[in-house]
Length: 443
Ligand SMILES: Cc1ncc(C[n+]2csc(CCOP(=O)(O)OP(=O)(O)O)c2C)c(N)n1
Ligand SMILES: [Mg+2]
Image (cartoon, rainbow, N blue to C red):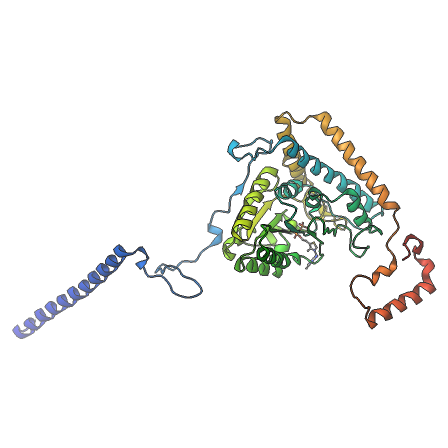
């Protein structure tokens, strides 16, 4: 029981407590008012972080950004698998002559791949890499470029080079490593390059070309002549440290470079699901602050439209762009690979028979009334004939002089290399008959 005094005290406390409660409610109310007053004067009043590393809103919700809960980036497409344009507004409406030229280049590329792949099997060239299945990605991306744009390739972009005008003789001389080849036999086959066509010589170590491309784009920006760099790389190359360095340099230095990923599902035998955990390569754009798009790489017009728009962005705004072109490597990785060891024939057949960039464009041209079976048979015959003619010529040309082992690098040959020259000379004097020296030109 409470005494009178006690109950008075208790009442006071209740009152006091009520006042306290009221006070804290008033304070909250006042705070809310202050906030809403501020919000009514400016929408940015909601306090934002001021850290130099990121200016963003605060939140009291403890949440992580979980990439796998997000929808994957959509794949831009113009044509369906039957070569029908889905939305006429997306059709680039290229003239017949240009479309036929694109198609002919794709078929010529296939013919070259067939002949050179076989030539390696017969021991006539040492190595080769085909582009089967990636013809749409290559020709569709090459077509919107200008001759002054600079291309950095990986190694599976023969179609890009062909579209830019590299002749069949030049392809064959390079793969034969003969004396007419610009590299004088010092590169492996398929390591093409052409100063005239602004196509930088291929480097074997993956992703070498990527930081170089960012740097070259920076130089082009300073030159200010309205050109950009296009850098091709594979899904596998995108796992190299150099790829990340290139993206970041390109973004922070505002370089006009199109980072064009051929995502063909494999890095030799490593499938993409072992290569990354994120949403492919296009999603990396957000991380680096680079505009990015994913396209159906077997749809030549989707690739064409994406490249045209990316080129415009790069050149007009001095900015990098990522294009991720989804395709499938139908051929083996190279002549040193047997892909039946790590993927099924059924899987390969699907892409070969049901979703192929060459047949898709052929169906488009047929639907337009520009193409028929007769023209197609004729084209395939002539393409093979052209290749065999260039092949026959290249095979007859002598191999480069052995002396080219020492040329083109140093103005004055250093002592260490002079010693090696001497050693080679002695070796050949002793064992020369073991080598086909007569096949090499004499300087
Ligand atoms: C730095 C480096 N590591 C490994 C290799 C061996 N290698 C050559 S090609 C290749 C796969 C590359 O795959 P991707 O970039 O997806 O290109 P794709 O062959 O599919 O066109 C590998 C691992 C290399 N050339 N360089
Ligand atoms: Mg790949």
